[in-house]
Every structure is written in structure tokens, then in C-alpha cells.
Length: 357
Image (cartoon, rainbow, N blue to C red; front, side, top):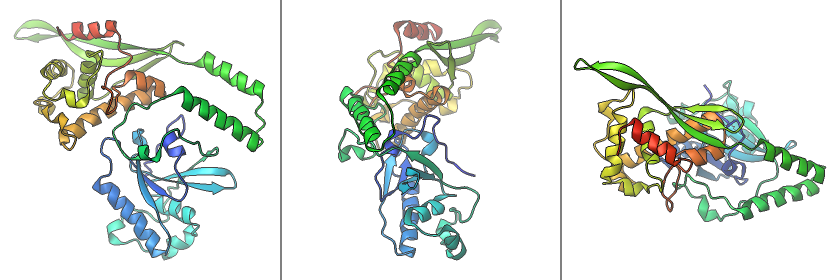
């Protein structure tokens, strides 16, 4: 079964800008290169060696979780530049197109080594082909391409200006015929259709009896984003992610991940929130967050995964990076992580609903 899930708003920029001549394994920014990644790279190198081909395999992190564990390369076709995206079921076909091999002949003659039996020859799955314009030049150096923790992407007027200028140059060079009136029309349309969001925390309670006394316990807790056109987007991450999210909302200036270690205020708020949420389990309640200052620890990796679940549910609901950047728990090595769109009113609501000081 194919695992390829292309985002509805197209390929992320970090994929659209991959260089020619490389096959790239897409990884999670939380985990980086794992033993599984290395096994994938070894298969590609083994395949290339069997056919006497030059090979250059790389890995790149991508924020969109639906593409983790997939493979990409860039080719030039009669339809223009294309990004090929494959999974284990379609990788061999992608490699054949990448290196100019006849896929049917390879299927007839090539025998997969035993350690690579999870890959497929001649199956029903095929690479996804995405046609793109000429490669966009990124406004940063190759040094910034390494796998790292960096959720919050930097934006600048200079970069946006450069991308617009590059597109206009492409319009002239390739004769696309986009006029100044067309550009003005696009500008006005996007200005009119620009979405802004507000966050709402929706909590429902039910009456239960504890030691014969009625208590109003939380029956449901979900998050909703409302846009300026009346649209509503519900995102509902797992219970632990939900508690972490609500805790981060309490910190208007945010916190660096390492500053959460040994932070009793953060942990006690998280614990109190978590134990009030429906479907919580004492089995999965961490004793503390003390190991978050160790980036090699399992606790650190698992904590980042919880933040990833929040990001994914927002993206699944809105398909809008601006909503994700403002309302997920975002940050990077230099900046504290926090919920940028959280307001004073939302913080007070969290305190009131969960009886926090």
C-alpha cells in the first residue's frame, strides 16, 4: 500500500528546491537520520552498484509527516522540471527513471537481495510526479541544509522580494505571457482572500459522582480556529499533546525546550491539566521533564513528537502554514517555543477551566 501523501497545497519548498543528481530520503526533523534511514540509503547504493551507476544519496528533513520515509529526486522531462516522490513500493521505478533504465527490463531481470525484500518490483504503486517551475534559489547557504531542529521558519521581506523577482524573470525568459495586469489581479485577489484566525478552546463537562458527591468533569476538550470568513477548523491532538499545548499557552513569552527541564511550574501545570482531560492514562504520565536538557534522550525525542502531533493536526485541519506557525507550539534553537497566537483571554480561560493559579 502506498504511503505517499502529498500536501494539498503542494510540495514543501525544501523539496521543490532539491538539486539535480541526488536521490534524497525524507526524514522527520524530530529523529533525523535513523537506522531505518541508513538501511534505505544502503538499498539505493546497492541498486546503483549492481547496475554500475554513479550515485549520490542524501537525506533531508521535512516538516510534513506524510512524507517521512519517502524518497525524492528531480528530473528534467518534456513537461518541464519534475519532482518524483516514491515509497518502498515505487522506489525501484523512480530509480529507473532517475538513471534512465528500462523499468520493465529491470523487473524481469533484477533479483532483490534478501535484506531488501520489503521493496517492490512491478507492483501497482508508482512514483508521484509533480511538475514545478524552474528551481527557486533559496536565500540561505548550503550549511543551513543539514538536518536540525528548526520548526519556525524564518521569513524576510528580502526573501519574498527575491522570489517575486525570480518569478518575473522566469515569466520573461520562458515566455509565459503573464502581464502586469495579471500580476495586479493576483495581488488584489490574494489580499482579498487572505485568512486570519482566532483560537477557541471548546470544553464540555458532564456531571459524575465521586464519593456520592456531584462533580463536573471534562467530557470533551478540543481546539477550534475560526477564520475571518466564518470558517471553523477543529484540531484535536492526542491527550498528552493536548496537555502540553494548554501548558505552553500559559507562558506568553514561551520556553526553550531545555528550560522545561527541572521546571516545576511547567510540569505541575501540565500534570494538573493532563489528569483532568478525558482519556488520560496514569501509565503514560511522565514523572517529570528533567531529561529535556539532553537532546540524546528518549524523553527529548518523545516530547518533540508530541509537538509534532499538534502541528500535524493544525495542518490537517487548515492546510495553512500561517495558521500552523501562529497556533502550533513553534520555536527553534535560538527562540523559545510557544503559541504565538495565544491571547490573554485564552490564557485566563485555561487557568479558569483547569483551576490553575
